[in-house]
Image (cartoon, rainbow, N blue to C red):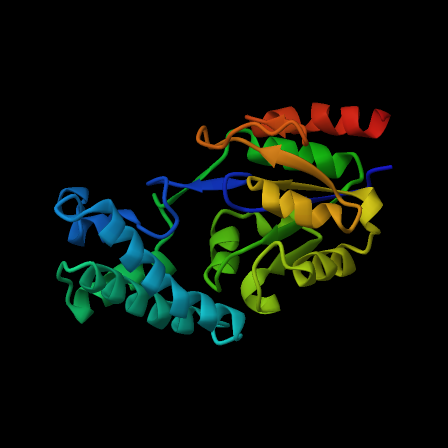
Length: 239
């Protein structure tokens, strides 16, 4: 019997307006795609990886617990990315981009169609709803901004746990907070590797394919519209 649902945030509840969680519209004002195209994709990807390493290390070390720390870390990220790619960005510009990313929410994120309708329907069915997501300290304020926080009984954020999915600690924290055994929980995520991690705890996975770039996977039921979720849940319950 399914009694709880865990949601990833990205592409399951909301999506970035630009299609990219890291390289925001404000970033593109300072580093437009045309400028990026003056260097090779390999150079850009190498710089992106190098700039991401200290960001991930700070996240996993538990040094990013406030929005102020997040803003500092992402300013470093943007500065290191652009200059590491052989392009130019001032520290002041990197700070402007990071501040916008951390504190400005309007017109940056788009809630998926039918989101509140689906959450209200699931609540009416008596299901416990939780968040299990790789994210940063600005996310609680974003959920409050969109008035989504009251829908959820439990929240597991990676920056608080100090690791990313599919690390087992993420699922242990989520199950402990939602108060259910894994076999009674469904997890909605857009990455198969995360669904595989959840499976180790008996959690049933649903692949979120609201991003058209995500391929189908025969190992998991999938949805391309959040409003399909109640029907998929009925199918899982009937097995």
